[in-house]
Length: 356
Image (cartoon, rainbow, N blue to C red; front, side):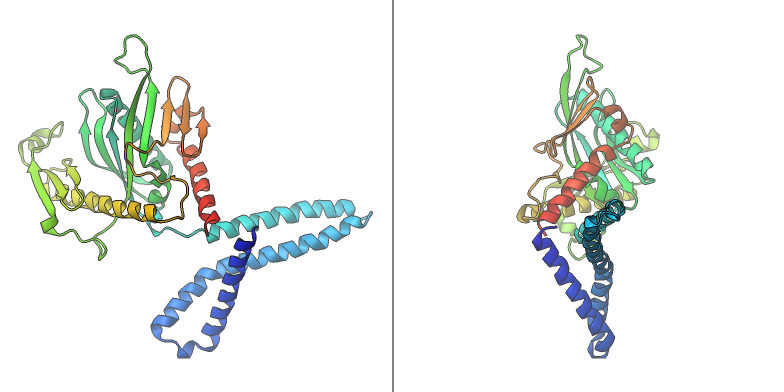
């Protein structure tokens, strides 16, 4: 462990002890708000301090056992004991590091995934369908629910655009690394000469937010249009102005929803997505100003980001942000997305630790 990290842990341990004395001896002098504030801080530091104390004790045990290596009779026993003690110490150190990583409150939110066909025309729309299926299967593996908020079907199948709502604990935290450009290399169904084409889609992951004091959607800032839904949906859907398009004038964000028969339901869904879009834009601006992340692992959901390349002929996926290449494309498309997400998450956490 480096000196700065050790010093930080020592300071947090001192703070924990100070709060312990304060809450036990001087709690009567505290106001109600102060007591709640200090109690919460004390509770948050409790686990960290306990693990830190156990880790320091493990180092003492290791040093004591190392002294036995000079004893010929106890040397072999000491070597075996050291292996156990060092593993335990390393496990405690890893736990300490994970506890030091700041928790993003948005990671536990539900989220929206917006998938758009970018370059490649009909082939890009077909690839957006493959990405959509991949995220749905991944959600099922995590026991999350999936709702289709809106979709715009391509001329030859697939989606020009589709928005999914993923409902489940930790959905936003795991899927936030999916934002950005996704490129595919394969032979399209319409290609008669067997040539490999390159197409792309963009993915934007947005945590779900409810209207709050931070973001208030004023009616004067909204332009709301209604129109008839297109595509399949039955006689009612196609003959009434149930579809809704909302434009947020200050930011230029536009959201359409036409999957529900009711105009009010479509409007509610569109407003929810719009709020998440605006909040996500604000988060991206904050990240640009912050010096915490040296590596751009959290994409913006635009074409300028280059997240991954999916090469079908070679069954290969490359994540360009961390230079990771896997020859398991078939598994990943069936929902085993943790093969890509977990290494990125580890890289992200390492980067945060280096900047604490």
